[in-house]
Length: 227
Image (cartoon, rainbow, N blue to C red; front, side, top):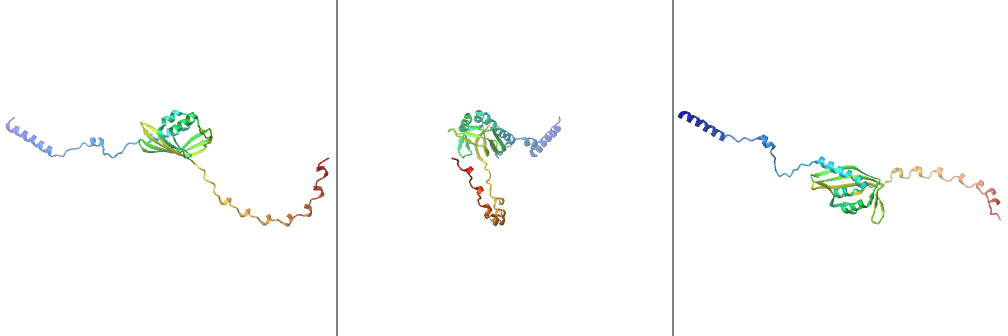
């Protein structure tokens, strides 16, 4: 290579280096779009459908648990620190539920779960509201007294995910009272119920000579005591 050719190549390479250093840096948009972001917004992915399915399964299984006296299911689903408000306003816990199930204190011909609705709060907490219908339900107290618990109840059960398992941590139920029958216009006295002239005593209703006792209506020897 001649000296002239060498300087020509050198100047060309030097020019390219200068031009490349002056151009703005390019961004790989594809890579930027797929790269994970962490903006500390606290957002999380919640599988709502999966949570609803699991909690619906747990609630719909209660009639079977009751019928089969499945103590293992109570121990598995209820949290050790669970708190319950019973329909009579008293407080209970897991140990009480286990005792009732083991002794067979709770029984019913049928126990239906209805109007179930699962509300998901986040990936680790949710609550279920619903209505239960109990037919010929009985609860036997420790004193041996049998209490009729038949009827309809509204309830709310609160669940929390602990160690990847859903646990019942709180629950409350209240009986559904039938509305009291209020007096309606049909129940009020109507003019038809008032005394009318046709209902007042008429001369025909007065005693007449024919209404007086006759010898035939008096006691006869046949009705008297015999010697």
